[in-house]
Length: 479
Ligand code: SF4
Ligand code: SF4
Image 1 (cartoon, rainbow, N blue to C red):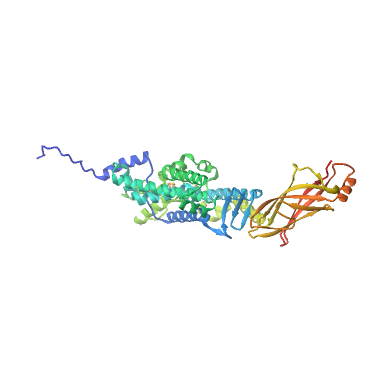
Image 2 (image 1 turned 90 degrees about the vertical axis):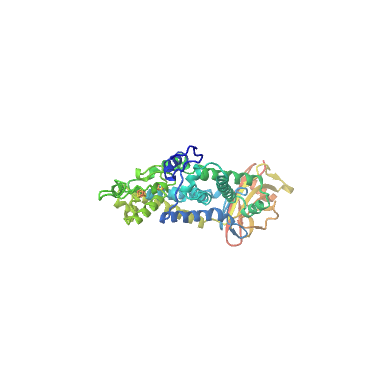
């Protein structure tokens, strides 16, 4: 007999019956990724650790009492371990960018979007943020349930904890980014004493906010709708490129293994649940696929459980078996062209750097101060010199004058015309006067038959270790 009093308790709905709704919600709002283990997931984790060790750790590394790697924009110098690059060395930075681009084309031609799936900062930080999300909100099914749950203390604590952790990580990423340009150790000390400079604080918050937005909130939408590289990568692929692919011939018809004609795919949807962009690889190669290969790990797990051969989802190409051979891949014309260009550029860069002078000198004749007549008919010209010690060590640099008999250096803004100590990597401006004695000036005028005569001269700097650099200029007589 049924009770006359209506029940006030909510009916108990099995969670399984909610799943379709949860799946619908997920599709509409965000992708909740299921964790998976396997060789490609381990590779991704290894690359995550490596890239973050470089990005977060390198600014802390010191060499000879200074930051080992730093873009010092104020002094216009780039310190790369023992190398000091100046604006004039832009060619090397350009070369580095060209090599990086060629490397990207090279690996994309061979393996599709491996950069996107394994090493792109967007992917790496999304992975890190999902790891933190998992700590606070649990595995995929728990996160889906939490999405559906009404707001209460538990949901607030979990969500709040996750966002605080995301914000802390984002700020640390932002500060580390600033540390590539400003001394990292000073930034750390300033942060501890809550005394961060306004510009440093602005850029740390700006870049940190960017990380929080991209990796925490937008995630795969950046790859799908905003990243330009994802759009033009198609031009680098061909029928031999190895891409993450589903073997439809073997997998279909999918479903329960009821007969011998059943395909190998049991339709467990694990490959979809682990996909960070929320696509189904069984629908064919798609432009949204970032090539992370975690669906290979997921499907391999399923095949292992079923004691079936792995590789229902695997790296494959349109040309099938032929493309899988390393020899064939290396024989492809575009692979050879990229490899040749890469090798040539790397060799040229290495040669250029090995031939680079330790000293650098630029000379500008001061046009604001005209050639002037001084005591007893002698003539003076003023020059502005930029002297740079590109070595890591301090050097005694000596400045001398060549090419004009009777001319001498009479002083500079830094002292005498003798040796001056330059710290490792130091650049200094010197203002020097060149004085031509009265008889030499008269002889020059006579030789040039008239007023406004001029003569070539050269400034030379040497470091006492056999290195010397000469820079030509002109000495003029007053009209
Ligand atoms: S389909 Fe596979 S390789 Fe492509 S993004 Fe999804 S999980 Fe990664
Ligand atoms: S993981 Fe493998 S078996 Fe499961 S649905 Fe995907 S392709 Fe089919």
